[in-house]
Structures are given as C-alpha cells and as structure tokens.
Length: 310
View 1 (cartoon, helix red, strand yellow):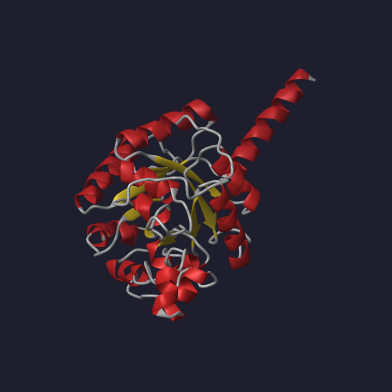
View 2 (tube, helix red, strand yellow):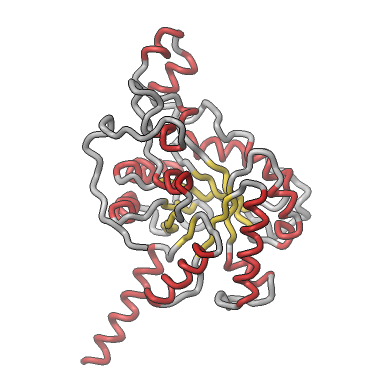
C-alpha cells in the first residue's frame, strides 16, 4: 500500500501506453487524439493490481487533490449522504483530473424498503447525468437484476461530457469536423456502473445480478452486510471474510470485479492488515477510511494525548 506523492500533470501527449488497453481509452485514443481524462483505477484494473480509494464526505475539490497527490487510485463522491449537489460533484471531478485519480459518484438509493419489484427509471437518467460531468464510476444501491440492467443502459452513452467539443463534433458536427477533431469522443472514456450490494434482497438475487449482461463490477457494503449476516459491526469475524472470499470467486466467474470497504478498523496497522486481507482474497478495489474518519480519529487521539501530558 505504499503511496507515491503525485504532482499535477504538465504535459499529456508525451505518454505512450499501448493502444489495446483500458489505458488507450483515456490516454491515447489515437496518436493525434487528445484524451479526456486519465483513469488510474482502470489502469490498475487492467494490470490486475489492487486499486485503493476512499469516500469523501467533506466533498471538496481540495480533498480529491490531496487524495490523488498521495497516490490513491479513486475517490468516491457521496450524493447519498451529505450536502453534495451536481455542481459540487462536477468541481470535484475536475479536481480529480489534475491528479490522475479516478472520480466515482454514489447516487441516492434506499433499497431497504419495498419489495424490490419496482424499477426506478429515474435512476438510469441519474447514471447518465453522472457521466455527463465526468464521473467514470457510478455507485448505487441496487437489489435485483432488473434494476441493474436498467441502470446499466446509459453506460457508454455518447451524451457524456456534453459541454466539450468532443461531444459537439461527434454528435452534431460534420463528418469532417469529427475526423479532424483533436478531442477524444465521449464514448472513448471508460465508465462503470457499480451496484452496491447491501440489502437482504440483493444477497438473495446476487447470482442473477452477477449474470446481467454488461456488468463489470460490484461493491460489497460491509457495514450493512455485517448486520444481515448476523455479525453486526464485527468486521474481523471469519464468516464475514469467508463471505467476501466466496463472493469474489462467484463474481470472477462472471468476469465481474469486486470492490470492498475496510470498515470498523482502528489505527494504521489494523487498517492496513484488513486492506491486505481483502487484496489477498481477490478484491479488485479496496476502500480505506474516508476523509472525516481520518480527521475525527486524528484529533480525538491528539487531544487525548495532549490531555494526558497536561
């Protein structure tokens, strides 16, 4: 988990990764094309290396810059909890671009009520909207294969980043404009729908969810899952680890990557050990503690130490 400090990009065209990869989608669409956004998460995914990232609850562009500069691979903006709106999410996405950290956004959803038979057709529109501001991963709590299939529909839609010349030329320009444009087309930018599995019905239908055509990743929400599985907040319980391991195996058989969050650990050593455990059992992405957790724990421990020394 060694992180290397990152600095803002100064030149982009000088990098020459292979063209037959996820990397090519963002760095070199073609030799003369200007890529839209880099994608460190997708680079790790392609190399089969574990990606590390975190939620931001503070939802400020500067937080994404700090996370990116310290070497985290992705940042998840939370529109489910807190005050973040679309304008703020767009600003964080732009900040993430400067430090090569892949921007994810979590959309509001509450799967713990109802029967799960309803399909919210407003959700696909929100997934598309997240892509229009540059989010490359869209996380949302879903619990049936029908809901997942509906939310997947906008992934790859060419209405992404509609404010850029790349969209104007590819969607509305002449063939000559599109051919001569130095901007990558919006559809060249990688994107993922990442269903958040955290409800009883989602567990019951998980095999069907994993079989949905086009699904590439899921996120195991270990907080709620610990309750559902009968070990509330006992995140080190062997049965939770075994559940995560077997779920990763099931997902991988469908070509689906699994992201998982380190929950309820205290101290650097304990957090790092949990992250390594998840990496060792095959997680493609690991969420480490989010920004406010870091601040709370640091100031709590600092003030306690100052009080002891007073």
